[in-house]
Image (cartoon, rainbow, N blue to C red; front, side, top):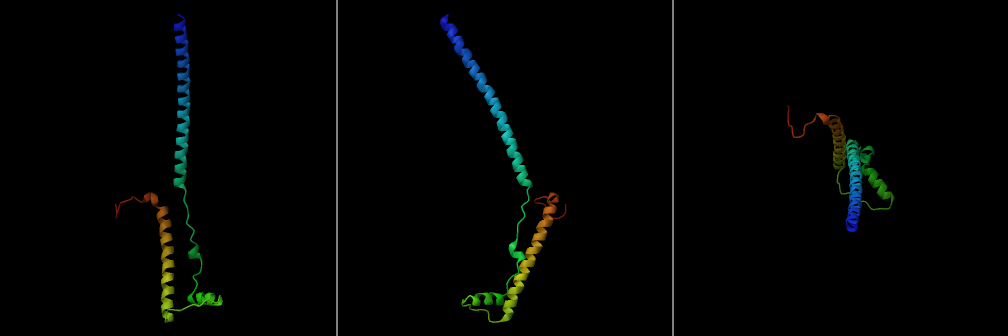
Length: 128
């Protein structure tokens, strides 16, 4: 009899401990669900954020070749000019101006695409 009572007490204690563990697991599950929900909302928030690039190089004036020579010769540096004619300098300046203009047009296109990204279907070509 004593042994049966002792076994019943041990089984009741074990049953209480198991119930406590089950309750703790339910609480932990609720916390994990909240953490996953918060993680999903953070991901959704980060997807909606728009990061704007800052183009420092387009806002600055491109120095001319003459300015470059003046700046470097004033610092007692020897500058060797490999171009033989001023027309090649003009061509270089034209190419640089073209690149800057193309970059501006590309930025405008990116802004336009960003405005209409909800209307764009990936992989679709031509008219639908």
